[in-house]
Image (cartoon, rainbow over all chains, first blue to last red; front, side):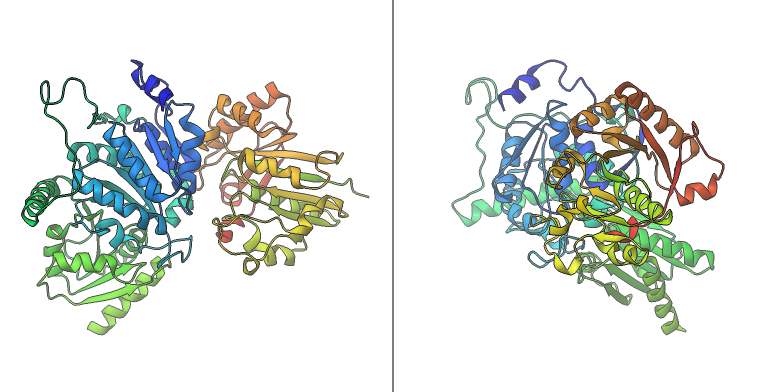
Length: 378
Length: 221
């Protein structure tokens, strides 16, 4: 840490750029995250190994020393989560990455980040569950990542679908976190982690993206109570009323942030009779299915929530109301659907579930499902 | 009698080691003789030969790899080397070894009995100059240094289905520059079947062009 401090104090911090210009590269999703964090001037990663996230750590450790960044491997994920908070308190652009059981252990610290409004960044590469399950793939960490712990889900969760998005949203995550001071999550999965595909990597500065400056929460200059407001960070309160006031305050702040961060994508939804709702990597299958049906002149659309928390219910409501039927496709038993239905309460459009917990969903499978729905309506 | 070929394929994660190892083993098989293909990946058990064992065996290779049902905790628990793989260099015929990625993968070669003294064994580095860790002459040179021993190079630069002749050529020139400086021969240039169908006349410097089959996409986990 001493070295890191010295490096951070030099004027041309991070003068040697890891990515020069714009580069089309062939990479795995995990690597892309590590490069994105480097390009975003992340100062330090805290982590504990778990598949399928490991190469984020591998690549970060291979490069961090060369580019003057820090890395701390902790004794477990509980510690990796809390040390990430520590990095943020010290004013460092800090992040961690995990999966499955590791995500569970990190919920305690992420709840603390919600309570103290600490801009942590966490990458989750979802694996199968419950428990250790598989190291491969699933979309079963939606509940946990959006609402884990004993809090109210004051978080921002981006569900990515490609290497390009892993790169773009990892950079974006740091800026959203440090702008709004809520924990931000990039929700990938084992497929995206291990898959290899071309990606454009860039220095955010070359794209006109300015990294939002960080600042320490503690150990600031001057005399606390004389030169500046004393800083008292709390996650514990005495009375119900005190806590209620704090949580209501957090909620008001979170509600104000929602319109600025909520994000979705629509594919041919404007006149769609059948709307496929899918997030993350499953959107790729849904998009291809829409292309297939539209070529045949059939009115099929796809709604993709990019942020799962906050969920883009307001944008989805008119599309859902207009549709004849909705197909919900996810590699989990309705974890996204529960969030979605809550935001469109009262919508009477029938919904068909296509749930495959822990397994991938292909374009062909979605096509068959939609054709079945169409056949029922004939 | 064919000259015995013994090659260990090393390189960066997702550089094309396994695909090149499979190509090499199958082409030696076609030329006649016994070929043993050894899975020596103890770093990343995700993309390995294991799921292809039966298919490659049916193609006439002697495959030394775990079966999926014999292993557990992919990527979680420590990997164990298949006992007979350790002694592979003592086998009759050609020996192709697919080694785990990076410097740690290459270090595992120490566990291959006889690897330091086998007069035929060559360590072949597979390089894709579009992989971020090996995307410039400087980075490739650093990479070679970390590997310890490299006796030959395969230039395997590609961008999956976005690959154009320019992609392959640019990569080749970067690799050639380093190979020349380090006095390491470039054994061949490798491209995908898809690329070869699109650009059948492609070639560079009269180098051997290896057209790789797409085995590895089927090997996930």
